[in-house]
Length: 318
Length: 308
Image (cartoon, chains in turn red, green):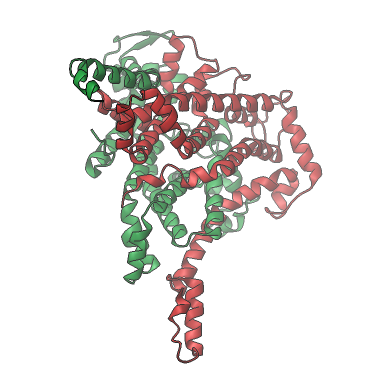
């Protein structure tokens, strides 16, 4: 675009050519600004990226190599296989039971949460009824209460109805998803024309028909974003299961990983090694960590399109 | 049509009520969950904070204000409150400023490079809880960390020389930002995508360069999202638990006091000494702090503009 500024009478001088070239590379940031931006972004890329790269490589290094060779070097495949079999040996492959539990808990909470949350957010956006403003305020307030603050009262409440130490103790509280309701409310408020709704109502369209034929087809990016946020939060839920479950067969991965590593020398050689337990090492701990985070990475890569350009986009008004 | 309008007058109220009814049906399941898992536990905690526990059985109202007095008198109360204040003062402003800076820098020139970086920043969000702490401990051990040379240059030749009580607020900030920032970078970037291109084009024509656009146009327009981030980050960080808990007691007994954060203290009241009343009182005090801050910010900024 800046090439059109060349005076067409004479050939550009060297100085002009240099300026044109620099504008093409640096845009309107200026060369100093260009490099400043690059340096800052790359420094953060190292901060966020190096630990993950290290974690990916760590299972390939035995106890000696992990502490001596270059942190970002690859060890060997034999150690990768050994770490893999070590985490599988722990309590006869209990890690896969936890993995299954994690999937079950995360997907169930996600499904229930969206099934009750999206209609609620929708109706809060399109209908006027007594108690609506109160419900919106309660949604905001409960959204601000992080789950961890509710865990102790929740424990006592679930204890009253004898649900502690069952899978429902994890699934049901996590299905309450006010953040999703609020996002759905914002999304429908800004993306669903009120005239359209009114017209459909006058034509005798029931609220249920409206939701099914107008609101749901519009909700794809919203559902993608909400599914991702909810899955991520549920998959990583630690404090809830940590307090509400004490049967290791019911643990999810985060709590399982915690117990797997406690009482071994996986983190600190020589510390607190419980005799008789499998000798867990740093490479094995890293492998277990990888098993835990890979599904989230995959879900992110699959839903990235929605996460990045999803429901947040429509709601900033200039 | 006309006949319907004429006939509409008498049954007007029933129809309105029918609309209310269908709205309530849409909202009912959510409302029940809200009662059971949002408002219920909060109110129950309030009730229990006045209860005395004998052999795990609550005697409601038997304790009066004793649980609250017990919490205030506990020798760790002021210590943990002080710790969390230091952590908040470091983590909240720094976290927000850096996230907004990164989002603005990325958005200056969207493209393949920016979108690869955004993914790199985001993926650590998959690492939380125990996995995050595990990774953090490795990263803070100079012998095996890729940041080893940096740590040694800063004068920390070993894990134990680095982990000291005075540095914990910064250390927990570095750990939390690693995992939490990506999500917010993506959200702020999404907000920037919503800034009207016409406005930006107009500014460009008026001679506004990329830096001026970021500072004078984009930054003010994403202000609501920054406030939103503030509220959620504050409410979340007040509840710090996993990092000090695993680092201090469960895993490696590093140089971290057993009860460093208020949430740990509440947990200890409940499960170390079985006093759920004091635990509830402590949790409620923390809730009030989080809610108070949120309320203040909401009122002050006019955020959460609910259309009545």
